[in-house]
Length: 509
Image (cartoon, rainbow, N blue to C red; front, side, top):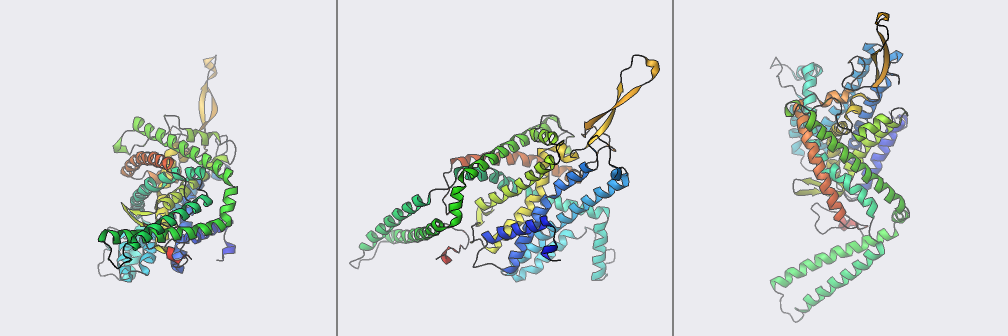
């Protein structure tokens, strides 16, 4: 199928992914296969993140605002068919993420470095998806083994195994959310508010530093002008000064390029808009913080505890974001627009967190994300982390607005008795329209597939609950750190003296 035949939203997603990857991709080390993989993985992450708003919309669209089912959804079999379609959509996209994380991205990552590792990667992926039980006939052919694999995955325990694999991978996504999303939610708005330092001031400072270092180098070299060798300490100082001078000269060249860059001039003109956008983002981040704190406190006070995964039905404490979504329901489609914006906000703040922190393995920095200087392996890691984050995004949004994520904008009719003066006239009832909650009859309100998928295993819900508390703590730490930091350099991250990866700064002329 040609690109022109794709739906408009897919074209927009693919165009954004192409621009984003090309913006950060190294011009010297770019590879076609890694570029395509990164673009596709990023597109899959964005498409998967949009599935939750679609799920909420479908269960809400089945009913009229007065609480009655629409004609086409009145049949229970029709509703079940729609619910199963959404559920299979989750399984399909999540399975693609598993395939990307365990096979596709690792294969591309090691393709140019360690070709001998390919068999190990393929074997690991096979062991991940293969059923726990061996085929009944151990002498069966390879084709019979493949048929048995698909039959097992198509059965109920096969789907349970797939759900368990996805939930296990979501735990890694939770760690990525705690690390990158929490920091990105604080650093993104504050960077927009503070802006960058003046290019003219930075060039003047760079010139002064360069002259100072050159003067110190000349003083050290003057000591050996008469042929005497330098001491070990002086030689070490001379090497450090020459390395520092090299970095300063590279920074000077980058500052010259930045001064001529039209994008920086446009950014300066749009400075007031950036400040307003930053203020809006920080207010949204604080709203999320308060909402998530109230949601976790509600679970701590009103759930049955660890043994049930801290699951509660409905909300016992006033949840501001949940109330806002419910208040927007009468004005179609404001609530769906808001839930979509919330989902995308999580994805883009995660991207900002990864971009500012880089790729870390515990305390070791593996790669930095730098415009036009990011290695292909770093981009693959970035996309893999985003795929893992997307898996955990649904639970985060459920924590922010539990009632809305469960039922959307559904309402139901509740029959209530009317008081009568004469008991002999019989009982009279009146139908009252109520918003769907945990007290609603099962046949009157349809639960989203996302909610059922999130609570398939109670022990995962317990871990997610404590992960939310860790998210709040990291967000506060990131907010304090971001506030204490000064303005960023206009060439922030382009030239560093302590690059831990193989930076290609030397290619810049």
